[in-house]
Image 1 (cartoon, rainbow, N blue to C red):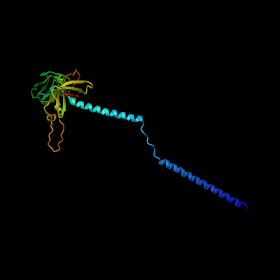
Image 2: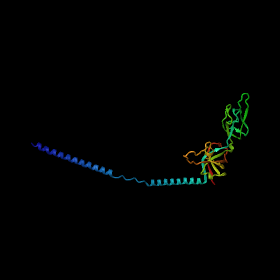
Image 3: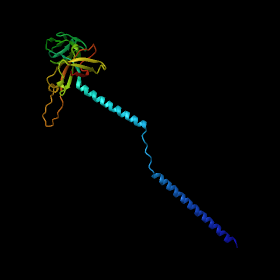
Image 4: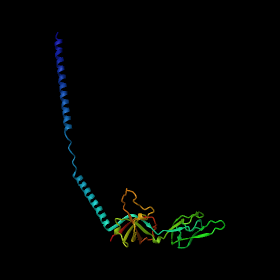
Length: 265
């Protein structure tokens, strides 16, 4: 008779404790969520640059400014004292050995590197004929060293064919092409510093021999002409011949690229 009433209070107490645990858990979750929400909302403190880093950046900036100023000053001084161009090559007076008539090349002696003497026979041309085949000598037009040999023994050539090209290496010079905007500062007799690409670090000295009386484009095989309405102004170059004063026995040959600095003073 007393078991029923005794069982009901136990059930009530159990339910009450479960409710309290649920409330405590809910309040704990809410507190944790509030704490998490509050932490995400707070801004992160900005990282300040250290004193050493600021000093390093200032030093780098000062060095960059000084370097830029030095380059600008050097360019200004160079432009004030020199006319500089790298549009220049070693050149010389070309000696062409041509066939005097049509025929077969025989007894050819003007090979690569051969020394030529003016009016000396360097080969012969055998003229083709029905009964007789006379021979005409080929003579060197000047003194020099053969740089290009185009002749082949036994081949047929026509009159005027270039058989060989020679240069007098004791009389080579530099042909520099100076912009027309700078040519007013160039005169015969001025001192020139010559840098040959084939001999880096070796500075040759020279003097201006002559300034050509016209732009290079005027004397080209196909001179420029303004025959259309789409004209574009292009800075012309003036050829300047420069003597080399100290070749010093180095193997300077025509065609080598050079850079010249013509002294204005």
